Length: 508
Image (cartoon, rainbow, N blue to C red; front, side, top):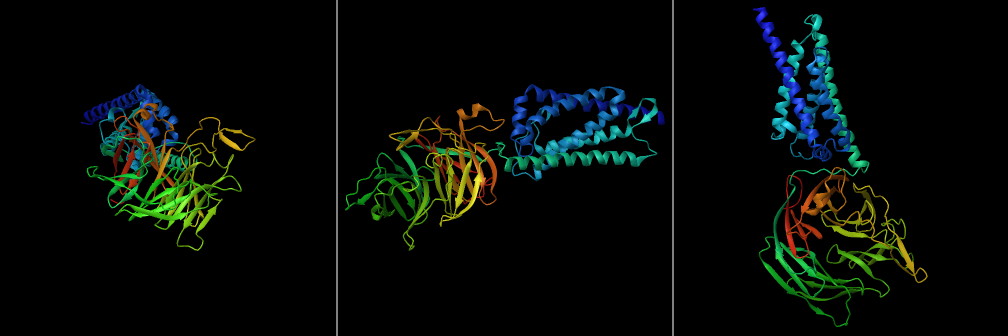
């Protein structure tokens, strides 16, 4: 009876060892045959992004080495411990993915490619148990046992040491990877599965439209070629209306580049080159002059904070640098400028060029630089409360300036490196569109989509990124967020994308 048990035990050990070896050989070969995809998947993992390159190389090599050692009797013992340790590492990775990361990436990996993460976990646990039994029953040559039944404590301590070591190793890599992403600007993006889905698009024929704002479930589009005409559409893109502004321009003001801003129940027609602000109601589209500035003062950007308050970007006459200012009709200090918000690196004009935005939910203005990995948030009194960096690595603007007419006229000598193309802030998030690829990202993706990075303005962290796919072969040139809908504008279409509630905490 004992002999039969020994034979069965030996068969079990041999079959178990060959199964372990086959699993690792198959997994390693699968990874190596499609190494670029494997490395990319690790690079976009929420757990090991910062160490994708060494992990991508090391894991299949270790799997092959362990498989080889499992074949030889003299190395079976150490190889089984190695297999057990690797499976503990893989299982810990899955547990952290499922319970401690912000999102669960797509499932992948050789023989397990068709399995979900929960099935991965069950599969791994089964092989951990198999390895434990194989270690328990395996004998070395010359009657040397892997585990002596006279010394069970030694075996238990060895197994626990390997198990705890594996768990601690992956947990440490996870914490270090998070630090690398959040603090060290390693330019590693992570992509949760399908946080944004395309709803539908509407052909608006002309490429001169821009997003003016939102009010009562409608999207308003201004037209730079026909400033008096505005287009509005509901969020189903089914009900389209046109509006014509009736302007009470008794002052005979000549406009240069007027734009529309919506602040329900009002609309504003603004022109920073004059500069003026006309105000009207959405109910009748009649506007009259609300404010006119000094002819020596002009502004290049303006955002409405409320029906009586605006923030703008202008050039300071004394310093000849970009500054941020505020106009508040209800405040005794109606006009205010701050030269502390924008940080000069080269000339104070081109190097501080960027996008001025206002977040009504946080009551914060945000300025995102075009040519460097930086943005600034401030309150409406123009006091800075946070200076953040994006995950890009370009800290200093890469621009070259040419001067003429005795340095009175300055211009860009060549097209500068644009780090941040577009931006918008809604809820607690800052959305930044960037065409610069991070590590492990395929260049081909930019042919069909744009990349949008999401930052949390409350926690001061990078959250994740998503692809904003082209619509009818047209790229999204600008976008804004209305509740849980992203409104994108391409050359000839307005396109709606849904922001999924699993990934975004936004109004519906």
